[in-house]
Length: 238
Image 1 (cartoon, rainbow, N blue to C red):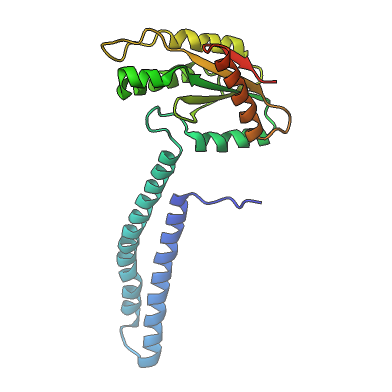
Image 2: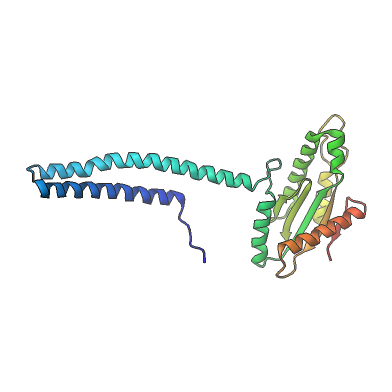
């Protein structure tokens, strides 16, 4: 069973209170023991000083440490986001997709997986340059994101390959038709122009208790069937 983790800000505040409180207590105890040992007429004033000095010094010192710790926390969060994000398209990458998809399948959600692959993508790169290829990928990512039903996961899982994990109630034929229509209107990314961009799709409905690797394998097999069938089409997994 996982133990809930405290918010980093809460941990820093609690740590600060402990540091300041501990500093004051230690200072007052040391001062008191010194008077017990050596005696002095200014006991009350010294005890006040013993309490006030740590209250002034400890928060400043701890505040600096807390600031550095918070910056480190933010940097780690940013690195974690980068590790799960495709830099070109802004979509989840394969790692993020696998983690999220596994969690939803394990929860027993009724889902289906669409794997999309841009047709003849190598020709775009070879004939129009890599900048045009990047433009095609970004456009495809935007179209897929806009077309995906609410609650879907959209990710770039390979070079020109994308994955959409959608609710089982989604009509894949209508979804693919909508995506294909939008892709066909891709603006020309260079002087040569890109008249039309198409994708092939493999679709697999998740079986109860099915693991992600099995679902991906079936969707990939359907994708290859769509490509073998002439591309620019959808094939359903068995």
